[in-house]
Image (cartoon, rainbow, N blue to C red; front, side, top):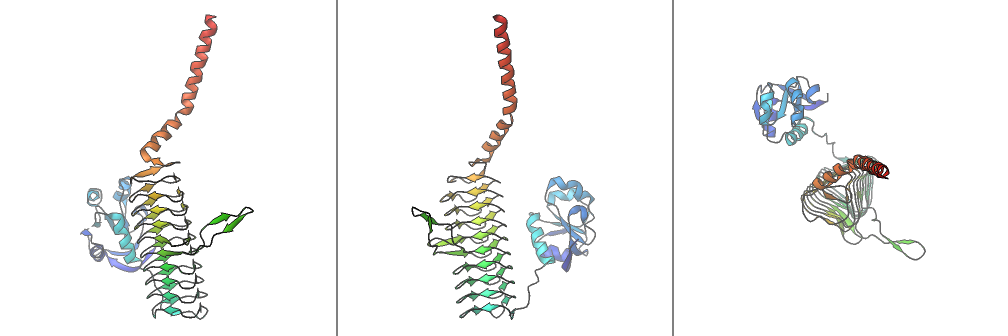
Length: 348
């Protein structure tokens, strides 16, 4: 099991995450593990009734759980209303990110007019273009490229070999993972009679504060104005966000999903894996789009949608259930046809 970088007693941890402690406050937590694999020095968490048997049998030193689950557990408990969120906070405390010392590696290349905060960190083989601003506590990891006139906010971390094209603006506490590309040209092409002419993409990308961009995700620059990702939105690996998209605050975007140009997502939308949204569409705040769904028209009413073309999830489930009966209905129809034909031959 992973060993914690910071050991804490159950009592100390409960105080830090705002939990009610039930049991031994002196238990020392030195790691974290799942319920069935946890030992006496490990923290675990319980959030689903399907793991009730694992909770009863766990050897964990302490478990984060909701109050209704106390009846099924006799050990030290950290009682909270939202176990999953408390678990995330606890892991942040037990496994804090080891931020490196500030400084600029001798192999980094910084162009003219770059403004780097004294406590920023720039690793080996990083390239920073002219006129960039690198904010306090920012960390540019090895091999990343920051184009001309970009802004990287305070406490932002840009992973190895990630790229910001010129003019991109990245807010505070943003996390951009390895290989992500922010601000490449949008896919704008004009037919000229013989082929296609690239339409210059002269806008930019803005990532607001606390945004996460997954590994090898692409967020394209706008044709004229902004592609904007709202505060707190989390985007998974291998996602395509085309030019002029505007995502609201605190959206969750899962891997392999794609958004055509000028898609607008309202606040607190959730898009599951491999879903696709056609261009120039609006999705209402609070909407959930299921895995592999295809959105081809505006969604004006928040809800859960699935299928292609998208439809309310309950309707999609009914349709899927009906489809599964088609083979049986076909066989019954054939049997009826055979019976009718047999009766007709007998009458003749």
